[in-house]
Length: 176
Image (tube, rainbow, N blue to C red; front, side, top):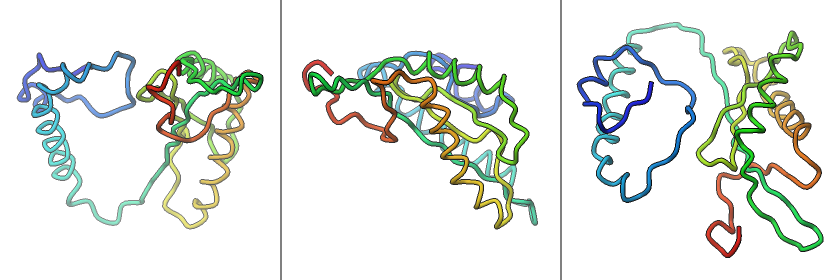
């Protein structure tokens, strides 16, 4: 559920909600964000402490881990020698997740999961299953990264690319 400035910190801490992928929504303007900064900092610290207290006594637990890659969607016009952000993140994410649902992911890599990232010109790809805590699991990481990039490029038109950068160098410069 969405936690916003109209919900008290006590309500947040007493709820049984958990962290998860970013849900759809619109970012606040800077002017609207500044008054919420104390709330954001306090909630972050309390969330960390809550998690720490919950897991501090766990011993000999198998380590599972994953990774995430953030892709920018960029439209390239070779004729005009221009690049612009492509605001198709949601559309691309939906198509990729639909294909993942339909895919046969019985291999040892388990497929991919696609999430909304900060901007509508961005997308995040993660492994569908965490990697295990074994040395052999390290061999799966690169394959999983290559798999995600390959699947992403299957849904992009020829004039779009998806570099793995979290900024767009021309953001705010002219008609970007």
